[in-house]
Structure formats: C-alpha cells, structure tokens
Image (cartoon, rainbow, N blue to C red):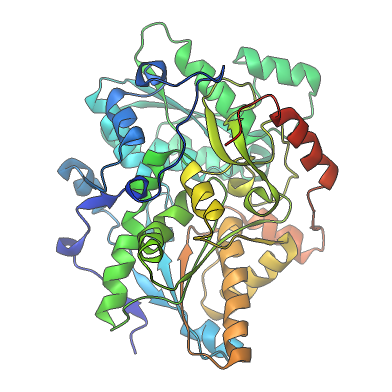
Length: 452
C-alpha cells in the first residue's frame, strides 16, 4: 500500500489543459454591455495573458522558465489518507493532492508564477492585486520577488485583521499589503465614507486594485487576479494532470469522486478540470465543488452576467453570482467569500457536469480537527470544506458498502489561521446562512444586465 505517491521532476506536465476547448461559454462583455475587445483589457492585463484568456486551444505549452520555478515544489505529492479512512471505518480509498507544500503554503503559486513571468515578458514593472485570506497575496509577492517585479496587495479588511502574519509573509517577499477598503483609492474612500467599519469584500478589493493599476499613467502597472478568470483556471490544471499520472502509478484508472473547496474556482478547477474532460467524454465521476453555506454562490446564486468587482470597473462575466454588492459574513474561510464564480466552473455546474455542495462553518472546523488528529496536518479553513465533504462521501461509501476512490485537493495549510481554530475551541464561532431576501435583492439588481 502506497501512502505517498511521487512523480519524478521529468514527469511534470509540460502543457496546461484548457477546458474552454471542450466547454464553450458566452464571452465577457464590456461594463456597458457591449462586446468586449482584447484592446479594452490592455490597460489591465498584458496582451500575452489576454491571448490565454480568450484561447480555445486545448493544450497550451508551459514555458520552460516557468517550469524551472515550479520545480521548487512540483510535482506535489499525492497522499492516501489511510488514518482518516481507519477513523471513519470506510471502505473508500481517500487520496489527496497536497498543495500545502508550495513556498506560500497553497496552490496559488501555480498561477502567480506564470502570471508574473508573462507580465515580465510584456515589460510590466508593478502588479496590483486583491487577496481574501492572504494566500493569493502571499503567492504573488513570492513570484514577484523571484522575477523582480513590485507587488501591491489590497487585502480584505476582516482577513487583514484576522490573519496579521499573512501581511508579514508578503512583506518578507517584498510585497506591500494594504487593508481594503483603503484611503489610497477613490473607490476605497467612497466605501469608507458609507461605512467606516465595513469588513470589506473581495469585490471591493478588486475594484481598488484595478483602479490602482489603470491610474498609473506610465502603463507599467498591471492588475492580476488569483482566481475566476480562464487563464488562472488554465494554470492550475497542473494539479489534476499530475494526479492522473499518480493514480495510474498505483493502478487506478479514474477516481469515483473528485472534491475541492470553491470560492472563485482556482483550486477546484485545478484538480477537477482534467476529470471534467473525462466526464464530457462519457466517464462516470462525481465531481463536487464545496462552498460555505454563508456564501452559496453555486448552490443558491443566480446564473447571470455580473461585474467581477463592486465598483463595476471589470467586464461583465457570465457566471453564478450573489450580486456584486454582496458583503459576506466574516467567516474564517476568507478565500471562499467571493460573490461570483469562474465562468468556466459556472458553465460546468449549469451543464450538470459537477455537483456543487454547501457546508456550514462549524461542520468544516469539526472536519479539520478530525483531519489534524488523524492525518496530522493543520489545514486552512478553506480546505476544511473539502475535507468535510470528503468525510460525508466516505461515510456514504461505508453505508453503501462500496469501495470508492475519492480524490481531494488539499488547497493549503492553516498555520497562519490558528485564530479561527482558537475561536472554534472557545465556542465563539457560529453558522451563517445567506438570507433569501438578499438573493431576491440581487436578482432585482441583475435585471439591468444581459442574461447569461
């Protein structure tokens, strides 16, 4: 029995899988609803990444210079959760891709490294971005430090307060971290005037980062996003492509179930899209994105064109959304508190290729503690959503008496998220459900936008 399954560096995938070739979506629109041209995106993104964003080519080569950096931690190990299996008395075999082994502690550098590299090729000097829990901001600061770019991160205020050492990580790699909303941008000042005590949101932080990028008259500053967009989903598919090779090494043709947490879509797409390809081509695999019950974008959101940010500066995207004015509850899974969902993940859900699930915060922390006391690792609050659903599926397999293969993506460690664990042990955390009236309000606001 193999508990850890490794690939040699020579076996690392040398191409990304672009699901847009097999899962066509409606195009994004300009903020006024007119057709969006690549030139309209040029003030925000370099043209080489815009080309990836709109590409329908199935396989896209990974530049050797990018691979040379990814070799620092990739291929990442595939592990079998034998101790969790024993604790659950399940016949299921649980495998998990351990993305916590990256320098930044999560899957995020899989996209930050290529994004920074492509920006450098295009002459970019400074990158702005947003971050929820701080994983993306840390990953971008890490990549910028290796490739010599300046990095400015707007971090959602509630996470900025909850996770102070994320800021220290960014600063260690040379990044500048600012609590959002801030006084540095026009939109940030507007939000603070309306509510000085706002916890912030990813939508607000995106608006600030985009404003900071486009207001640089030199043109040497660009914006970068850690999730949602097609090219980010593309870069993350290295996870699932590696997992396929690793499962094959122990004689497993395919998993029965694939599970990952989902906020904007990046780590979920990374593990699942190579298997969604198989489902499109006739395989039977249950693919489960797991989101917070307090931010139920896929399970209760509206499939519609909507802005990716709160100020309405970004293109209109065809996606599941809770409305771009959504202000999430301050749960500790900061990376899952986004109002929208990747258009590609949204399309997969709309077409019935994946089966979204929402889980409450307390169940997730209970799952995380069981994981720590069996497998040993202290995991991120985001990843705990995947573990909670994995436990549900393992118990289901036990009740059905079926020997299923479950593949999970462990998106990151929780070493800087211990404040959330502390509050859980102290009984200070509560569950939140997104109110129906908020969804109805969002539906009315979306009537002004084109239908997806």
